Image (cartoon, rainbow, N blue to C red; front, side, top):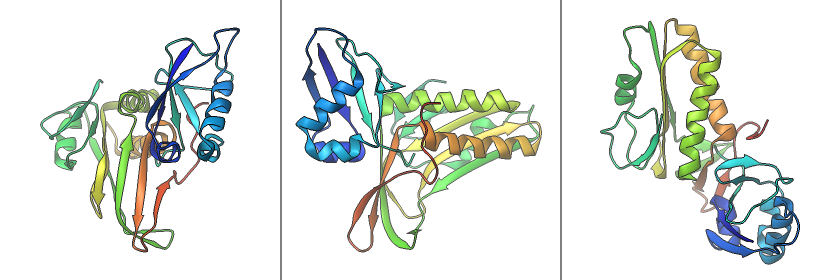
Length: 238
């Protein structure tokens, strides 16, 4: 049984590579737990990451009891920071969800979600702040499991729509190196009444940080670097 394993963020740094092919015995059922045990033996520096990580099988979060099949792609996902989606290099697009490397424009998001049926439009912009828990930040580096991240961003929109009467909604996230005050994420929501728009936008950013595989690496003024987890609990399953 051949399994492709992909590593992201701190897991990639600990393993020293971003992807590897693993050959497992074909006899009997092989669980994800067995694969993780094998990876821990092959990459001792990964063990601390594996103890905190979740995994995705073919771009869906799974538990360690999941039985693997030949050809599966397993992503090792350490805690995150963090319509159809596309990777874009400019802002000449109006997709519901997108992972981009170019600067995000609030005005374009406002245009995307504005609708004559709505009485309120909220555009939330998450920006790079200078201080984190008393430590001075110089810049951030964002990384995403892009194929899965766009699907999970769509899931965030679906979950939000289930709870509020939303007219239009979109989420865009930036990757790459960001300077202080740069926008890392834009969430746009339009609703008939303002309280729904505010509540929906807040719910969306909290859910994004819990289930979407996007990470940030923080570069501090003292010369240290650190992959930073979420401000709250990261809970991609249930």
